[in-house]
Length: 366
Image 1 (cartoon, rainbow, N blue to C red):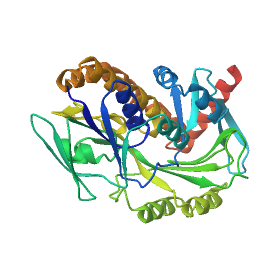
Image 2 (image 1 turned 60 degrees about the vertical axis):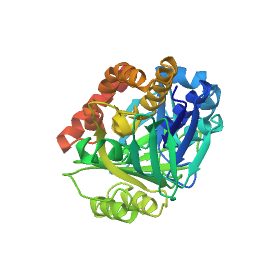
Image 3 (image 1 turned 180 degrees about the vertical axis):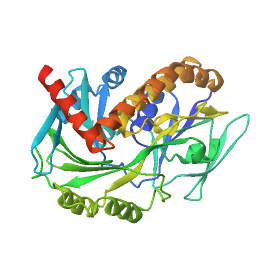
Image 4 (image 1 turned 90 degrees about the vertical axis):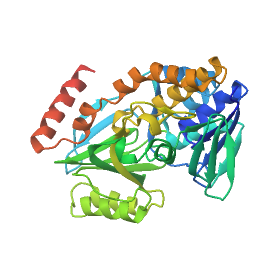
């Protein structure tokens, strides 16, 4: 039985997988490039099957207590007047800040952690997987699972170049901390110009507001680890616009050391495993932030992978195949994000007016 498993990535998918594997008596090590748990991030949704996963972990009461309590989305004009609202409250769904969920998952997961380290090489054979670590060490395991996100090093080392699997969805996005005095409490406020969106997120249960930026663009070559370059790209895209609250939000975002930027991209792969190496979460199937399904897929996918490994008594050949078969349909469904992007970032002024009109009709029915 393959008992020793290395998980790369200590976020939602990696921690969920580690927790469930230990419940089945697997020996788990988690390696994470960051020096500590990543506390930042935006709001993520826990719904449907994912609710069952966190309930089984005993975390549902804590997640309810930490829920963001956001009522909906509000679209405004340059004078900050609401032109349309969409109520997004759903009793079957819980939104929680990503960092809060990660902290809760970490709190119930007792495994060996290697923070501040990452995999630099993978060599697998018929009996196991040997990995080289950036710290200079070499470790051997029975199986390796990459849960290391959109820019997964595990995927690159085991499956091939990132460009072979990423599908760019024509937009770039950023989020960062913002002045909590701005915006309406418990609402996501959005302001649009053609092909761009600037937003302000105000949770009911958190004092810290978040600024969001999305812009439509042709592909841009950039280093996903160079935060200085990321800030320059967002400044170039929004710095000349003095409309609404863009200057205030941009200044605050550019001053935030936790500023996050990336392409709106999806990961599409014909298979999520090769030999003794598998992927889960965004590393395997990132649906993009526009899907609103990242946490749901991470929780459900990691749980399913652990259950299949347990049911197959560690036989990765059987478990990985069943895992792929069980998740493929759900992933395909969640990767259909076209409507979400058009709602958030209309391409034209005419498209914005149509969006606002449709939102007013919907509000009238609620």
